Image (tube, rainbow, N blue to C red; front, top):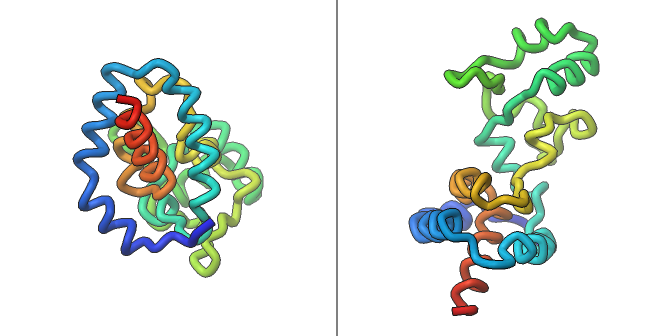
Length: 168
């Protein structure tokens, strides 16, 4: 597993964003046979190559959506009411989702890139980057966004593109 160099990653994204997004749109509109099983195989390869703790770009530049259950669980951990926790840390976006007020995430330790509430983190965080979600039609839009922020998503899409192009 290699440490992520964010500067190099951002350059790769600048150079390849459009073609990876076009690939995802193509897959979204016409998923090839066996795509979901292939993602499971590629996912295993990706996590042998990407060290999230050397990156934490998701926690530095994105915000999870907090569910009511997340808020209740995390507030209890801090011995706060859900309302007090929400008032202190979250805001409601235009779509009505509860999001972090600031970035990087207030629970990220910037010295070691570890989450201070890892065991009780929001469900959105625990599932991130959603690489093996079963229906590409439902998650292609998520991957299109995440390819710019997450080296694991970038690698997965790049590998999937290479495999499917070689199949002909």
